Image: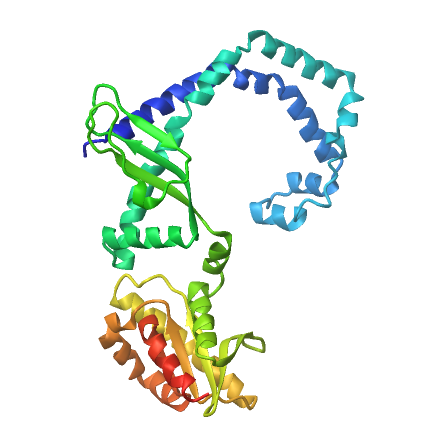
Amino acid sequence: MEKSILEITSELEGIKGQQAWNKLGFDKLLFGYKDLFAYFAIKVIRENDDIKKLIIDESFSFRKMKEVLGDYKKINFDILKQEEIESIPELNSVIKANLVRFMKTFDPIKLLEALSSTSGVVSTLPLMGIPHLEELLEIACLDFDEYTDIIKELYVLKLISNFQTLLWCEHCLDTPQIFITTSRIDPNHLKMNCLKCKNQMLVSSIYNIDSLLKECILLKDGLLAIALGWLFDDRKICWNFSVQGKYEDDFVLETKNGKVLCECKMHLIPKDERSFEGQLVQDLSQLITHVEALSKEGVFFNQVYLIYNYDLGLYSEELQKILDHPKLKDNIKQYRIEPIGFPEVTQVIESKSNST
């Protein structure tokens, strides 16, 4: 596969950056402190019996280390305090002598060269994002124009902000034209002609997600729970979220016809029919156990919805097959359990809002 100008330039700048950092001699500076590191390590070990026991333990493992050391709050690191270091003449001499040697050969110009050569690392970010975007479009069943419209809408709503934009020209082979900016450019305005050849440049932007949106995405039930809560409020449906008991209920709705249980399921979109069936059987089995236990405690639901974050209509045949499974069928009917995908949610909520 032919490499792009951006990819070739990134590789070359990465090599130049590594060479520039090597010229600074930081590796020699760190190596000069080897006696210092060895002394501290041994001293910390000698001050802590738990570490000494781990060292001679024949069944030592990472898991055992974490069990013994935990969050390291019980470990004595007093030797690392500045006053302890200053009280040891040998350590002071090692630090000062090594630093003096380094400063004699240190050239500030080389530091500037190293810092200016790190753009290769920055310009690889868009290259890393290309396969991620392709996979995202495939999973979400979106074309690029639809994805672009979503990005523009998120930007207008201030749910994302421009972190960095990279523009490059694939026509100027002799002298690559690459521009990086941290300006907050609207997605609608991400167009620029090459200053050299006047052809339109390729562009890639990195965006920050709004902190509240990020928090919503990272919830256990993700944006699905947020959307349901908003819809319930919008339709004036009385609801409780994350009701604690022997089992945790996601949403319990209060309607004229009785309580309704809504359980959210945030899953990756199944790769095939087999993975969908296995996932659904597991979810239904857990939900049946859940509702059965509640019924024994005297808690009954008029309806139970198992709500997925993707369209179950794509798996209608497999869905019906599982609903008719001999081991599940009777319980599904008894407890009035109905699996639905997010496209069906609004219709279901409309019917419940009319019965509140």
